[in-house]
Image (cartoon, rainbow, N blue to C red):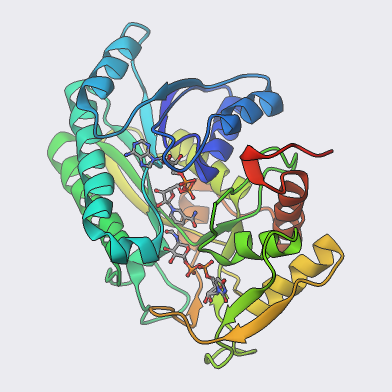
Length: 343
Ligand code: NAD
Ligand code: WQD
């Protein structure tokens, strides 16, 4: 299949490019590089010997999308789109809601309109466990109510609705993947998560371990969890990448919609994650206990059986691989894609 990957230069997108190319698909990446660089695609080429075609464009640039789809039509068109491109920082979305709604919603709608015009009606969408807000029941199943608590989460739940309505009206085949907490990196250490300032736990821990930041602040140790720190369902980014390609290859043909949690079903606390990282890097990762972060919830763990039953997908990599690969990426790229690659 020829797959358009929006946001394919980013963290999850670049890992998914490897999985797609490895399974023999043709890949075109569209990205405006607002949170990434083409070095990730150079590294994809280094890993799998092929470079995805790349178009630097913004999702909201309709003429650019039109010409991309028209060009692809000359060789059979895109068979499907995997739509990663979005802004994703929760705190930033609270401070700049219009920017988030504009980018994530206007950009997506522009993409979907061009897809419909060109008869490309198959899409895998990056949704998030954040759509569940404060869950009523654990583990969280796909039938849990949708009630996001921040503008970023609203952009995801709104786009889910737009896609379900579009699928019903125009016979699209849509898979919504609600990711829990993706972490880790490709085992080569050539690609990984590269935030300038990390908002999430694991990249923060990795940067502290590499000496880029002095310490991790643990956001509260008085939560109703076994050790008092927040519990999350972390999954290896390579497993997550595989889930996209499974969804693409194993989805029911024709018009259909499916919604899947993508997680492991196992939760680890902040303290457990730091301890695991210390074992991987071989030295202490300094941390202090700080106040709770606004909007946090104690425990978020997926009910992950639906995707296993329907697509045969389940996480193959565990905590040890997550921290090993996160550390390998950070160790080899202490300054991320901007810095030198170490052996
Ligand atoms: P990322 O920032 O590394 O990748 C997103 C990519 O989209 C970047 O390369 C960015 O340059 C690009 N982009 C953003 N807006 C664009 C636009 N208007 N036009 C073109 N390109 C644009 O983020 P990621 O962690 O790889 O996340 C990928 C997707 O998964 C996002 O939709 C995110 O909301 C979702 N998601 C991420 C997580 C997570 O923890 N990383 C969890 C759940 C869901
Ligand atoms: C994990 C745990 C924190 C940082 C976020 C988004 C969600 C999704 C995934 C995109 C929590 C604690 C964190 C730190 C800490 N992204 N923590 N010190 O909050 O589960 O989810 O990323 O869709 O939408 O909300 O992930 O990694 O930020 O936090 O103690 O410096 O680590 O309190 O318990 P979260 P996270």
